[in-house]
Every structure is written in structure tokens, then in C-alpha cells.
Amino acid sequence: MAATRDGRIAYHYTPEERSTLRQTEIRVFERASGEETTVTESLDRTVGSVPEWDPTEEYLYFLTPEEGSVALRRVSNDGSGEPELVASEGEIDGFNPGADAVAITKSEWDHPGDVFVSTPAGAETNQLTRVNSEYLTDRAVAQPEEIRFESGAHEIQGWLLTPPDMEDDKTYPLVVEIHGGPHAMWGTSGTMWHEFQTLAARGYVVFWCNPRGSTGYGEEFMGSIERDWGEITMNDVLAGADAVCDREYVDETNQFVTGGSFGGYMTGWIVGHTDRFRGAVAQRGVYDLSSFYGSTDAFKLVEWDFGTEPWDEPEFLWEHSPVAYASEVTTPTLVMHADNDFRVPVNNGEMFYLFMKKNGVETRLVRYPREGHELSRSGEPGHVVDRIERLVRWFDGYSEHHDAPRALDRGDEGLSASEEESE
Image (tube, rainbow, N blue to C red):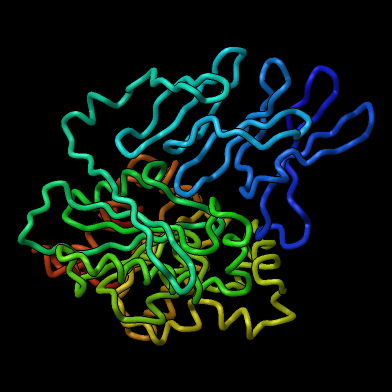
């Protein structure tokens, strides 16, 4: 919420009904008259930041996801005219509008975070810092390739990252990455930059996309997975994987899949519905919707996305839970979870692991002590590194392209990260 000197208040507004499937708008409340105006009504994008007034209090600045980028926009204080695009390259995560310029912090594929300055309307933007230039100069950073592909009647945006030293006469294994949310969006930088670049450096082609349900493509696209997380998203993700496998340098017999949170849900769902992947890593995922509902701090996600509650349609929620298909899994699957995860409590990871274990799947459960749902983004440095190393090691162990020891060479009993550290 942001207030002006004359008593106007700008705030977020999301409709109460089916809120997780609806876009967030900005409303301006006039204290003197009691009138409210939705100043972003004409923009088919969700608002992703707290709005800020410029010093003149004539414009409101705000962020929106925008087809793989996070854009900075501004709109007039009374909502007249269309919202203007100020900056749209890369993933902007912070801004500060001034009288003559706007300070911006953003990441792009070739740098993980720097400060820029733009003119108020975005006519000119200049980079002020290069804080990681010395580190990046000595390292190969691959440039992602944007791809567009069809999934049914829908166009889906995705990206492909190839090994920096790729040779023309060789083929490379493929890792399919799936984002969380489900109402979120990936681009070419941001929080997953280090994981994607590490996998590429280890000899993997990396593919990721924004399937239906993602933000940044309008409300209809975001709401299209209502009451069906698994099948619709899987169709989009696998359509992208199929398109990527048409490339001569991709070994279509050597594919892997991973994701966290909703991406963990999708990893569990996919290995329960296809055996195309040689290995999988399911991270902090929702695997049973009813137990998730009863233990999460975000139970409304089930109510709004699925339009039901566990006591009304228990069989329906079971049929849409990855654990219901654990007996069909044949893919070696590593399960990672954090002990203090309150968004997706660890009982979901334990349940999925136990069900696969009972059904003879090659699996392990790794639990990270002291960590929450943000482990991959803001966990203890040792755990952040450990998570990526385990992910790569699991894929190496099942890949025909790597002379690595089998992933289960230390036995097939699940251990916590803290237990392994003490061995």
C-alpha cells in the first residue's frame, strides 16, 4: 500500500472468488470522495509488486511478469490512459522512482544482479554496476535460446541451454526443469540461474518453459489449469521436451526431470504417468493434496485452484495427487525436502518416498535440517551447494554419458543431510 500527501491510497486488489486463478490489480482510493478506481483494469497482467508513487504523485510504478521477463510499468494516478512500459528486459526485482530517473535492480542471463537507471518513461536505460564481472570473466556462462512450441492449440514459451563446450558430433543428455507456483513464471535469469548454468557446465542440455497456469501471459492462460494441475501441465512440458528432442545434439534416450514445490508435484506426477525419464529429482513437492491441505500455510491454494475441500471430494483430490500413482513409478527418483518447510510440510516428501520404497522404486529421501521452503534460494550456503551437487550426482549416476558411480552406491536407505555430514 502506498499513500500520497493529499490522501490517495494505492493498494493491491485480487477478487475473493478463485483468487489464486485471478490476477492482482492496483486500486486507488480517494479519501476525500470515497471513490475507488482500478487503474490497471485494461492490463491483462497480474501486478507483482507493491506500487510506488513517483515524487510528483502523478504516476504509480509497479512490476508485472511479462513472458519470461519482469517488466516495470507506470500508470497515471487516475487510471486515464494505458499503463506504460518503462523497462522490460531481464527480471527486474526492485525499483525506486525519482523526479528525473528511476533506479532499477535486475538480472539478465549474463549477470545475476546489477543496478540500472532509466528515464521516467523508459526512453533510455543505462547500467551502473557490474558487481560480478570479475567472477564471470573466468567462467563460461551459456546464453539461453528462446523457443516457442505448440501444445494442443496453445503456444508455449520456453528456453534451451546447451553445454558451453558442446561438440558438433556428440549428443548430450537432457534435463527438463519445471517451475513452482503453479502460478509463477521463469525467464533466463533469477533464482534458478546457478542451477541451470551448473547443469549445462556438467554436460547437460537444459530445457524449461512456462506451461499453462504460469503468470505473464494473461488471466485466461493462468487460470486454464483449474481443477487439473497434472495432465494439462504435463502435456505442455512434454510437448516442449519432444520439440527439444528433435535437435540432433539431444539424446532422446537419456532424459531427466526435476522441479520444486509445484515443480516437485509435477515431477512426481510425470514419473507416475510415463517412463521416458532415466532419473528424477522431486524437490519440496506437493504429493498428496489432502494432507497438504491439512498441514500447509497455503491451504486456500487447494480450495481455489481445485474448487473443493477434502471432505467434499476426497476421491477427486486423491486422483489428482502424485502419490496415487506411486505404484506405477519405475523411474529412479530422489526426494529432497526441508525439515522446517511450512509451505509444503515434510510429511508430503516422506509419504511419496515411502510409497515408492514400498513399490520397489530406486529412491532416496534427503531432508535438510533448519531449512524451509526457500532452501534453493536463501538456505544455508552449505545446503544450497549440497542440493545442487546431489541433483547433478543423481543424474550422473543414471546417465549413459557420464562415467559416474551409481547414485545408490552408498546403500538405498534415505538419510538426512545432517546425518551424511557426520559420516
